Image (cartoon, rainbow, N blue to C red):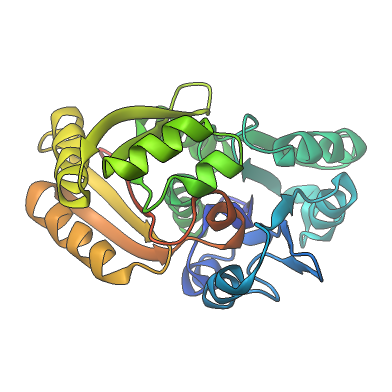
Length: 286
């Protein structure tokens, strides 16, 4: 019988019911408005965040957990001495969260077995991986089996997303102001993804949201074909388009499981409302 505990952070955007069902520990990042700081997903839900974002005069900032927060989590795991903790986090190119977890590892590694993993992913592209490992852990898989599967998932997971406006990416330094203005005037929808290093990059530019969605599906179909896959669709207050995207995925892919989730406050602060994302990973051959 395995004894594995899965830890992640709030940017994985995993639905609360799955977090509870699979006993996943989620360490929250913070969202900082001018008047107050909130813990992502703890005292600020996605719906509340986007409402506040619409009322805010300034785009909020975000901040990572402290190493001490991670250390507390690692030490609090029940029967931690006999448990392997697998801690999977937001791309180190996008946040210092992975670094904070690594510092915490240095404080506990003489007492506990902890594997800190840089997912090189964001939002439910992390979540889709975390959920699969947590399912294995719950079923009694060994730490070695979970880690082996994790390495495959990290290689076999792809995400594409499209934003409703380029303003948030521009204000967060992801694209230049001139590109944002030109894109808005021409109604260009850049399809974005994450490269092998975990950095955001423009996969392709198309005109119009419908074409962007169709191209995302096409690109993933070219990659995965008829292989069995797990599917995750996430959105920032754009559920109608997210449902449309999920329905297209059901038609085009050999779907073994699916999740529809909201993009939380931290990722939402960087991509803005209206964003939709599609994550796929290969299902286990077993």
